[in-house]
Image: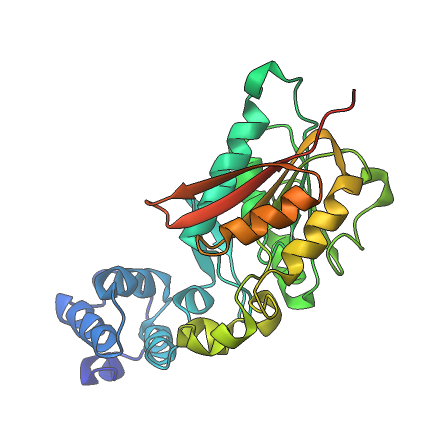
Length: 288
C-alpha cells in the first residue's frame, strides 16, 4: 500500500524532482513490488514522471496496486519507440505486435524478388488503439492509412493516434466500414485480431482479463474465428500482389497459415524470439 510519506506529501505543489525524495521513489518501488509488478523500478519512474502532484501520484499508485494496467493509468504505451495514447478499457499494444510493424515496413519499403512496388494503401484492421497503423505511418512515409475496429471506445482512442499520422479510422465489423473505393486497391492489410481461445481468457493476467474489453481478446473456440473471416474477405480488398499480415501465437501459426492458404495466399511464417511474436504473411497472386 502507499506509504505514509506519500500521504503526507499530498499537496497541489508543482511536481518536480525536488518535491519527492529518493525515499518516496524507494517506497513507490516497494509498493509496486509487493503488488507483484515485475518491473517495479521502471514503473515507478513512469508513475512519478506522469503525476502532476503528490495527490495524483497516490491515486496512480493505488490504481496500479489494485491491478489496473500501467498504460491505462498514465494514458499511453511505448510501442516501437512511439508514444501511443491508450484510454481505459482499450487493448494495450503488446511488444510482440511490433513484429507486424517490422515486417509490414520491410514489405512497403522493399521490392522483394523484383516485384513491382506495392500500392501504398494500408489498412490496420481490428486496430484497437491504432498503434500498428500509427507506427507504420511513422516508419514508412507516403502511405494512405486507414484503420477500423468494432469497439467504439477503441475507435475514439485510435482517432487520437491515427489522425495525427494523417490516417482515417472507421467503426464497424472488420471490412464493413471501409470505404468501397478501397476494394481491390489495398497494398497491405495489417491485422491484430483477437486470437485467444474463449476458454483460455480465464487464464490471462488480471490486467487484461479485467481491464481490456472482451471483444479485443476473444477469438472463439479455437482462437481462429476472426482469422477465417479476415482471410476470406481479404482478396476482395487487396490489390494484386498485396499482402495480408496476421499476428498469431506460435502454437496457432500453422492453423492461421492453413486458413490463409485455403483463401488463395502464398504463405510464410515469421517468428521473433526477441519480441516473442509470430506473424503469418500471405501474398495475393499478381494479375497475369
